[in-house]
Image (tube, rainbow, N blue to C red; front, side, top):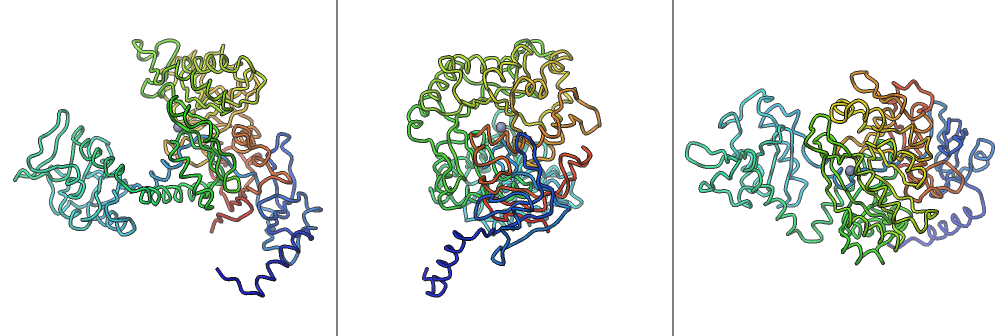
Length: 566
Ligand SMILES: [Zn+2]
């Protein structure tokens, strides 16, 4: 790009001026500022220059205001906090889920065809279009042609001929595919029903595009095959769109940093490129999910810290050693109270975990292990303790993701070993309804989501949502953390609540510490990155019930206003 000469001089003069004068770019004035530091200090003004916070407090901040200052926001109704961080989510998965068409509210098949057609207009030919949530009983008019109430693919296939389409039924037990998808899956009139599945056919024996139970597999397989065949450029374009969508959603909710809970090295390479090209909409701290052999091969040179102006970091590994409590997959010390033949599932070899812990020690990586049941948590703590034995004072910051159900004996080990329980408070209130059933009263009381006991034993708890498993909205987890109140109004062992200040720290300073980023992020301090959220109320002092109504008015990331409510 050619810059006109006069403009060039202006830029030079401007930058010299900036260096000499204390001129802020963005100023927040006469508002409440919750600095989110350990002392929970407050102030009334912030000056931002470039990507940094340069002054605090009205007296100092006003000195930085100049006609050159781009924007001064003066609004006593606003309350600033540090940028929020979601410490456990699946970033690309969140983007994918947002791209998937939500068909739950569709009132007719014609409406669904129109939605898919519209989506096809913006996607490269051959890209799969996915949707979910349709249910024929919700439609107020019947499809032009229907078999057993289900739509026949012809209208969709005529309107969307060049994109394979797969739309999952709201039950999850059936899906719809158009002609392009069926062709890729090799479905013809000759195709036979697989065991445990059914390909719905019309009177002439032609598949209508609806697949029940196991018959869905052929369509899913075709989808994953064509995804694998995509060129590197196509994959990049698709992931870039997922990142854009996920980022947009995060910024609307005041989330400026995310901890991505498990992606491949290939994704880490892609994110590195995006970060260098300034294409990451939020800061991403990525955990790598890989087996011991791949880790051993790649760890020596795969660590990246603060690529692209602090937007991308890889320095940790993710393992999952058990399942979830709902489907009886959490690995327990004693059998389930409502399924006495089972103590859950161990999903990752404990010896391989120890091997990976050794690699993490060797290359100074952080280890983050998904553990939900009390047995899983004990195995992880034992492994961590053994791996760290020679150097317990090291600044390892190893984490247990979820840490939901603990034996009372293990609770103090977190604080003692410096192990960080990364817990998503929204899981507590959404699971509470079945926890006493699965674990019985005693285990629930002593060990389920014991935030108070963990914090009192010296641990910090970075909060999050596990999106797209749950919505990325931090208010839900913040509210759950400080109330433990279920939608029906019942309280789930409320003596384990976090205080309001701890709730705020769990979304700001504690995630930064959990990612070795507290020198740059997590609180509002001079010299730290200007990641700041402006809320319409004070999350520390508003009535707890109002937390869910709090609204983000503005999100500032790296000194830039990246979201502003209308
Ligand atoms: Zn997760």
